[in-house]
Figure 1 (cartoon, one colour):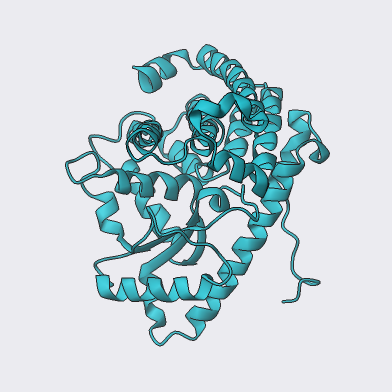
Figure 2 (cartoon, rainbow, N blue to C red):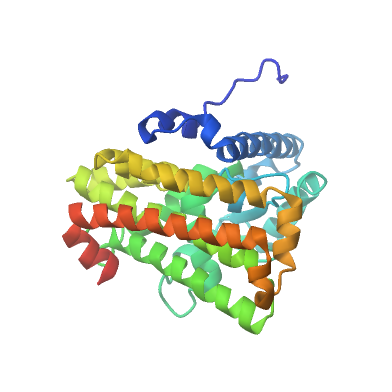
Length: 348
């Protein structure tokens, strides 16, 4: 299909802006990042569909799934973004060797067009490893990361994506004893992942001596907004839906939305969508800055002792403080409307 005849995807962000009290012109970086991300996802899917069509063992795709995580999965990508690629396989149907080979073919197909770092997501992962022993001794930071990100920002690229996500979600929802009221086991795991990110930052900058500025600004912008959106969505589900089964369905459908859309969903329900205005504008400034190569380079090489000499760092630090103030207003609203839930299931 040519670009002239390809269907135009509607912007989910633009559609909600009138309720928030903003126009697309007021959040240009968010709108641009969404359009860029969708274009890159379409391209990656087309590349992998071509690989699938010509593959000597096409049945393997029925037991494997490829996802884009990170900024691309959250629709926040720019030309400066890389592709965090997750490859998941069903170990009951595919051998580790087969999965490793297929993953290598995926990388070969995409590597000329995407920067694919080989860090956290550097190997094929058996789906059964992710969903067994949750909270146990062999449940590592890696398996927690995969579960949390697959559900909240995993953008399908190829294979059995829907079934894979469904299996992970149902692992929490179908638990007989530990699922907890309001699907607390999922909420606890998402809380746990957010705290893991905070401690991972400490480990990397204090013990591994890695660059700190971009990491802390991501924690105070995209990661904090992710956590806030999870809390808001949980409160919305509790307040809006009485039946557990219906609540599960609604959570499963929305937990993978971008953070700002999850936030607006909740605030709209509570009659205060305008409280999302400041998070939108703060996040727009953050995305605009990180989409600039010069800004990223300055932050990457900024010594902690020289942080006050960097105009861009001081601007983004102040922007994060404004986002904190906006988040405080939202938490006040949620606490007022869902006090018992917030105390029992989010604080204590």
